[in-house]
Image (cartoon, rainbow, N blue to C red):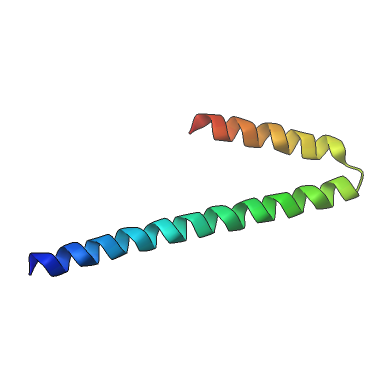
Length: 61
């Protein structure tokens, strides 16, 4: 019985890790396309501000 529970736990952890990385990848893809759109609009200042905000957020973790 405990063997089954440990197998289920291992698969749940793997599943959570996969979903976590998928969410991170989707998030970075959306951010990059948004920045690309901003740079195409010649609004480089705003995209630079986004870069700074993103760096500040990443430094907190």
